[in-house]
Structure formats: C-alpha cells, structure tokens
Image 1 (cartoon, rainbow, N blue to C red):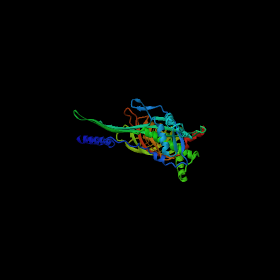
Image 2: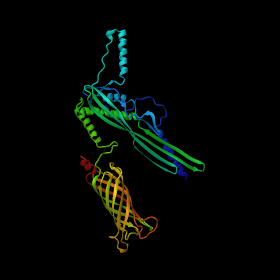
Image 3: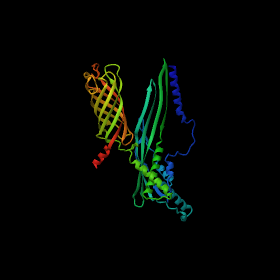
Image 4: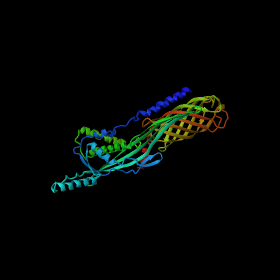
Length: 463
C-alpha cells in the first residue's frame, strides 16, 4: 500500500512540475510582435514591376460575435477590432503595395488644413501649397466575415480510485474575405477567401484519496494552451493578401519583374493548393469517392458460445460477405460464415450461418468510419454433424459494431464484434436460465469495392 501511494505522489510531483517549464518566473521586457508561420511565405513573393497604390478604408469585424465563456458570453468581441491595421501591415510586408491612409482620413485632412493655415499666417500665401494626396488605383474591401466556435471538440479521461487525468481540445475557425476594386470603373477585379483554425487545449491531473483514517491526499495540476485569435486573424489576412497577388499575376491584372521560373513555380504551387482545397471540406476531409455500389469481402475471426453448459471455449470462423450500398449511410449486407466451436455444442462443433442485415455507416465521408448492423439469420449444422440426432437449424437476431478503414479507393479493412442471439435456448441441447443461447464473434476482414461510387451515380442521375 505504501509503495502504491509513493508511486502516486511521484506522478503528481512530476506532473505538477511540468507546467512550470513555460511559467514566467520574472517580468519580461517589451519585444517586437511575434510573426505568424505564414509571414515568411508572404515575404517570399516575387517582386512587382510597379507597386500598386491601394486604399484601405475599413476592414471590419462583420461577425458581430462576442467572446464565449464557460457561462455564456462576455462583452469582449470574439476577434480583434484592429483588422484594418493588420491588413495595412500585410500589404507593406508583401512588397507589392503602397497603402494609403484612408481609415482616419478626417484626421489627415485636419492636419493638412492646420499646416496650410500656419504657412499662410507666417510664411505668406505663396508658401501654402502642399503636395497633393496620392489617389489609389484600387480599393481593398472585405472583412472578417465569420467566427465559428466549437467547430470540433473532443477529449478523453481516466479516473481510478480517486486518481485520474483528462484532456480536452476545442477548435474554432475564423474566415476572411478580401476583394480588390478598380477606382477607374468600380469593377471588382478579384476576390479571395481564407480561413484559419484556432486551437485550445487543456490537460489536467488530480488525486483525491483517503490514504488512512482522517488523512486525505488531494492534489491537482494541469496546463492550458489557447492559440491567440489575433495571430490567427493575422495569418488569415496574410494568406488572403498572398492569394490576391498570385491570382492577379495569373489573370494578368498586374505583373512581376522576378525570375520567370520562380513566378511559374509560385503560381503552380498556389493553383495546386487551390485545386486540392476544392476537394476537401471545412475540416480538411477529402471528398473522395470512398464507397462503391458493390463490395465483396473476406472475414476471419473467433467465435465464443455463451450457452448453458460449462467449459465452452472460443473457436474460429471464416466467411464471405457481399455489400450493396443503398445510400451513403445505409447498405444491405449478406454474409456466409463457416465456424467451429471448441465446446460440446451443436454436434461436432461445426456450423454454417447466413446473415442478411442492414448496415449503417456513421461517418461515411471519413477514412475511419464506425458502423452498426442489424440483421436476422439462420445457423445450421446439418451438413457437418455425424449424429443425425443433433442435426438442427437455429434462427437468430444479430447485431454488430465495427470500424472501417479505407486503404485505397478499392480496398478497405474492417474490425468488428458481433452477437448472435438465438430464438431458442437449445443450441447446446439444454434449456436453462432466463436468456437464450448466444454466440459472440470478433472478426477482421478485407473487402474490395467494385464499380463507381454511390455519390457519383446519384449526381449523374440528378444532372
């Protein structure tokens, strides 16, 4: 017992020290702001033939959302209200733009008027001329148009005798739209769209246990990480500026004076990313044609008979299944199995079973998808038993839970555990207890998909 408690204390102490690795022990001096991971790529754009004179009036937060808390929401906004300033700096850092001050144009005009009046009063009217304001060739509009919370959440935990640990994560998402408008005729030259996820993680460990009479051990520690939303907005804006420049080069709206081969490389990399982005959803899952209309598979595993007699052990099963997909979620499955049980049931322990069932794929678009199947089948030993007295056929209801893993467009593997609950209680020749005999099975299999996918066929029919 003492050794057990000592081990708990060691774990608590070691875990408790882990958050101090990043803990600030003293005040830190001011430093330059951290750059985003995408900043270096923004700076690597090929140089322009001539910088674009661009005006930015307002790049607003258009979400209208407030920062979420454990008890609802606060009066603080969910995202930064300084997106205009972030956009102007991104334009400067790209090397492609000459941004003009338009957000506080009233302040600029007032200051110029003060300068004009002062020069007129003390230098004479001949010294009052200021250089004219630059006019913009394009106006950059748009804003932060979406901030979605809890796009994906999850966690795990384990607790045993008052000691345990848990972890949680949450993913939010911010979206940016940016468009270039020609001041000559008001035409929208190009619109780009970028998103960035915002990750929050929490890990904690705690102990609450009576070590002896009137002696309570209680300890807890943990660490939390929240990705700054301001950094996420900055990276999304930098990505939007990058996309605007590259798409403008590709469409011939503006030109670069850089190396031709490098310009082509940048353009091709961006177009490849854009093409790949069209094939995935907002969680990064690829829209593959994962499920075909028809698949044929082989399965093998173990079978355990839960019957009235004692001493029953596990045997083995092997079989063939054919699956016909009726929709992205529902399919009709037929499976034939040969099995042998290591116990004194159903003759010489060999059997054949046939199970038609309906299968429900819970996450059909994922590479790993859990599924459930419900069916009704028959099991017989008529063709294997030597003793005619024990030859019989049994009907049963079946239920299966498993996972599919897609290896390729044609091949997938699955792992499943199932139960066959018989309509009668005489599988072993005895009728005892409140429950009928049943058979537990665990299988692993591989299947080959034939033909094109259900989604493709359905879309063609709709067209």
